[in-house]
Image 1 (cartoon, helix red, strand yellow):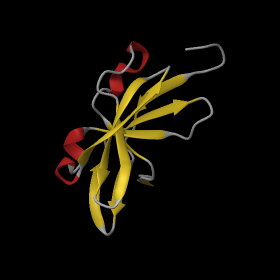
Image 2: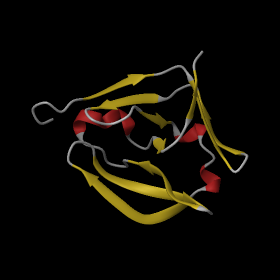
Image 3: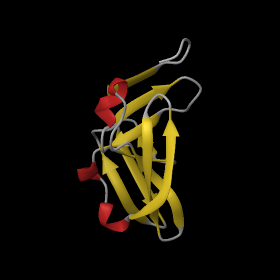
Image 4: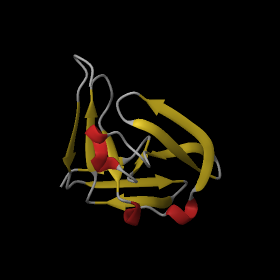
Length: 109
């Protein structure tokens, strides 16, 4: 990490649910909470807790100097809604293959 930029990852237990057009796309009590300087908390969900059958791989890829190259997936009317780091950098290896959504609902338990 560069000076002043930190990323922490911790195991969460709150229920994280993603609903799109009335359909539950993901629901997990096993989110990884990624906190990064200057960014909102992101919830990375295990693939077993995501309806991956609803997702279509996108051509989009982005690069983060701290996390690596992200791959994206879309729903029919929501392009690039989901992303993951198939080969994350060593400092964030825990998020490998976990899926992240832009607007999850977090239910505090």
